[in-house]
Length: 416
Image (spheres, rainbow, N blue to C red):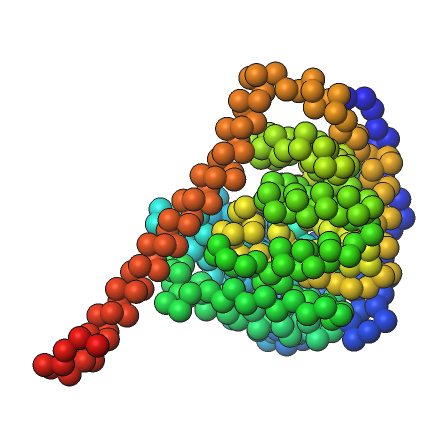
């Protein structure tokens, strides 16, 4: 595969606050920078801390967060922690007893049950005093503690202060209520699939929820790609739908440069196989592909001209259809330029280009079979099982509604 320069990330891991509008942003180009900023924010919280994560591991960094949350609760801060039960299945159930004893609150999202196992809270969100928030791909685990080059996984995120923090806090409230039971249930009224995307807004909070209709992230991307001049995608797990691949191809045909940085090392090798099954088709559409080499790639970032998408969502069926995810769409030229500089530095110094010759060499019948099976698992089997469960829940809701209506109908009343 060749060699790449494994030098450290150039410049500071975090960039100074930027933003000319109602919001102020801080770029965190490494997992270490993002986690340290979160701990500092918790230490300075005055009224409330709301934290949501997929994986919380018993480790040095896990204990630092647990202790920081507990100390905040002892100061009288309202602390609430929401942890996904599957993502943190190895964590002892008494791990947060000190936090709850200090007055904090903790809930597990969707305890492990076969009937609802598919639907996970994959969000990584911290809101402090309803005024500042952090989003990104970092879980609370030791593999995120590093610069992503010499140590630790490649990840990061953004800190934001401004009105969007209140929107994120309101969504956390809704997710907190969804986690009130042992098992998450598809709500009787369904999940709203309204697309709140509004062109021209400085920051748009995109809340992705289980469902197979319109999707807020796909819709926002579709609109932005229609007029894009430059597209840079960093995706840990990349399995775009046929529709998104077509949109990327159309953008290239219009003269747009589309570059995608993918995992050369992955913590989910089967997903990497599935992604590589699409390499030939993407290259044929003119999309430039690169694989990050020094460490596992876990970041989820998209730069479209002066717009940055950042958060927890991958570009794969699970993130876009099955999980609960959060992405921010930020229209800020300075922030987008900072993210793009790091992206281009990664391509130049820490990634290898994917060429047609490399793809041909990797297309033995055995490798093609592996890739097709992996693609089937992630693009077909996983979404179909989730869709079946959602359909069963919807039918159960419809039967319940019919029984309630029947009970309310006066005796002797004929059919309507």
